[in-house]
Length: 51
Image (cartoon, rainbow, N blue to C red):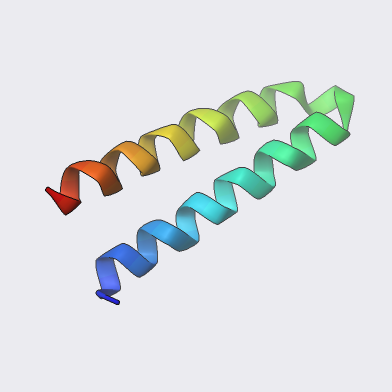
């Protein structure tokens, strides 16, 4: 696997984990929103990079 795609995969997993933590701890709802936005951005970057 190329290093850049590996980095994107690690970031994507990290953002999903942050989102889950944000949803579990209701006071950190903003953390969930930020995590989902970054996960979507990382996925979009990975998809654009593969083309």
